[in-house]
Image (cartoon, rainbow, N blue to C red; front, side, top):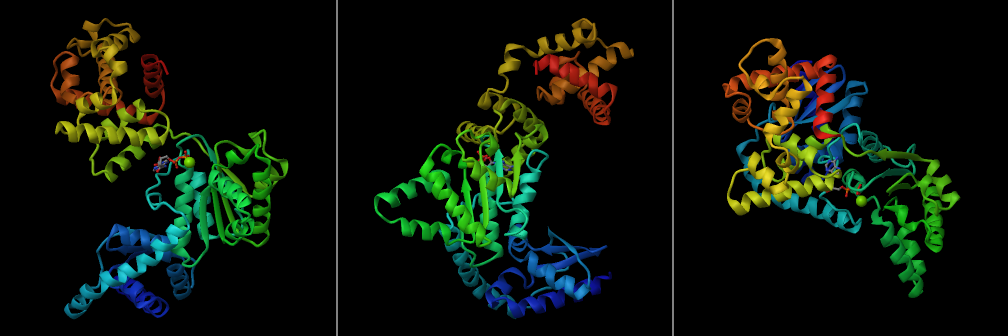
Length: 457
Ligand code: ADP
Ligand code: MG
């Protein structure tokens, strides 16, 4: 589609939106801030002026925009939102003037409403879909939670997300609750932990206020209860939970739960509750793999305004504890160490702050090189020697690769460790081995074997 067509299509979409939205919302989120960047095979790319604008549109207006575009184009389109100021229609001077006066006021009003609903729903805004990093370990749970937002009360009801500590269950529950509220103003949403549910129930019984308690929990459209493992074994809580569940379910309301393990493995959970869960969708979140851990670290560092070098991210991902909370704690410690000492975040600061090098400290770099040499039946002096024969050169390149990727040494340090070469030799070697490893096959297997031996994992 030509640029003109994209623009006129977006013009029509805006015209419809202007009719159906409040002036405040239209001015704050759409006017002069959005455009269509491209349309290809029903993939419509929508440009948004700012990241915040993008999240807001994705969370709140995706359904509406899609509906209008689908109707105008007579096709079912997929929408993607991108931060871009391309094609934005310039705002005329007079409009600019009036906007600068009115928008902050509108913005305040629009977000105050939302703030109130989020607060009433007990939602923590720190957790959103936008700042949830997706990888193989959590993509099913993520997709299921998104599907609940897009099409609630239907297929995935109840949705139960289970997994170990710190894998993102609470994050996804909050993200779901807030996305629902952003998308459906006025929806009655409530998030709580099963402990809160239990405590409030006990208090209600003591104060003879069970009617209020029931009205609160049975009067919502979306109920999200976190960590339901705590209700197992508590008979009266399970009883109340079961009836709350049945009531909401029979009214076609959406339920979302989390649990620290598959509910079938909860010995003290009533069978009838297990059956209820089995009637919906149960998905697991696995502990994040190395790649996801690295991605989360880099993202968390960015959130904290820290530009973390990928090689440090990799090193941290290997050395910090298994849960995402450990990764967050690591970033905080590094930030604190950097602030307190006034030093920049580099390898040595990371090592001191995290104790990353504990394994490497015990085993010095020289020791490490020695082990790699031995793996290839070479002596340390052979692996460091300038000999170019493949018998020495290949093991040396592998050693350089491991010193970079696993120990996090700089290219200069690597060159010094391995016979005082130029650092460009180290760059070349690391890239070469990396390419071979990525290809898979013999070299990848060999490096993996060696890595396991070196780190005993
Ligand atoms: P759980 O409820 O499973 O114990 P949480 O949801 O409390 O875990 O997650 C622990 C911390 O890790 C939170 O601060 C959360 O934001 C963060 N976290 C977990 N998984 C992710 C992810 N995939 N992307 C970004 N942050 C994550
Ligand atoms: Mg939790």
